[in-house]
Image (cartoon, rainbow, N blue to C red):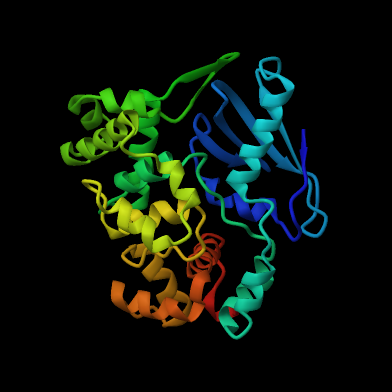
Amino acid sequence: MRLYPKMPYNFHLSAMIFSGGDPQIRSYREGIFRQVLDIQGTLVLVDVFSHGAADMPELCFTTRPDDVLAENRNAAAGDLISSMFNIHEDLAPFYRAMEQDRIMTSLISQLRGVKSPTTPTVFEALVDSIIEQQISLRAAHSVENRLIRALGTPLALGDQVYYSYPTPSTLAEATDPVFRACGLTRRKGEYIRGVSQQILSGALDPESFRTYPDTEMIISELTKIRGIGQWTAELTILRGLHRSDGFPADDIGVRRFISRYYLGDKKISSAEARAFAERWGTWKGYAAYYLEIADLLGISPSAL
């Protein structure tokens, strides 16, 4: 199956954020992004890879088992992959908005065609953001992977097993000992279980936030939920809803990226990061992502 992104689009750089991922859960290796996805109730392992250049982008994807998806479900798989990688997004407005920022313009020239990915569901972004509260990203990824292995649905293909993300119904019933075995504190387990139970009861529909016209409205609704503060809400919005103005100023990594590329490694507070990001207007979330990718690729500030 083939997909045709809006140019420019650099799949390799856009998928690099997954390069350190668990190959049985979600990863990007040797030019192939791989993850188990739920396509209208059917679990399939999806491989996504690029055949095109940034100015003539073309993606291909395969699903395994290759005989379980009807034609309409193949189309649904393509729609989900397109949404996850935001391949139809127009980068031109972002690039124009950054023209007066010398450092960001220089980064854009090196990262041209990078589009930030999002999670398959808003629920996944919300749970991951809860897990990542007040711990390092490396530790959080370890906990996330253990949670997926423990509670996700396995998909066996040949002699290999892959794991899907746990469903709200599974996490709503997970016990404290199970959460603790995955590395979660009792309190975080309670938050995740509570969010999942609200979804099952119909009190919470994370996907409905896609229709909200204003990001601040979403933050207001999310922070009413026990365990969801400003940072968790902003991170969920950035990762799960692809709102370009979502900016988690409390994030240590975001502050470090700004400091490294703009302020000579001077330590800054959350308030200072938020004030600094105003120069990027409604694109501050995207600008922060470009800084993250630049850091991941080892682009030196001295080269900008």
